Image (cartoon, rainbow, N blue to C red; front, side):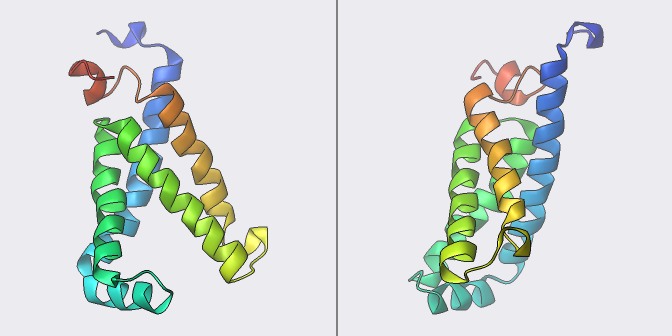
Length: 134
């Protein structure tokens, strides 16, 4: 595939995957690095057992971020990330009662990115495309 033959939508999807993937890798890495603290916090806010939910977040965020970045299993991992964003919005609006610009606006914008990837897929510049699973 020559560069001049790549539609701009696929370049745009690569950009979305890059930023979304690196965002989630960074967030997931902190959980991977300190699983015990994350598990305690999740248990405190009602997600029990905390270690189970910690691993769910690590899979969705750290590994999901890597997979989305490289464009493999994009729709699956974007779906998992959507749940993370929705739960983040729920926690910040219902539990903490925060206003839009007090902490959940990032989840709101990120939700648009994950929904885009679910609907459109990873695009031509992805392992999904090259492996024929797009």
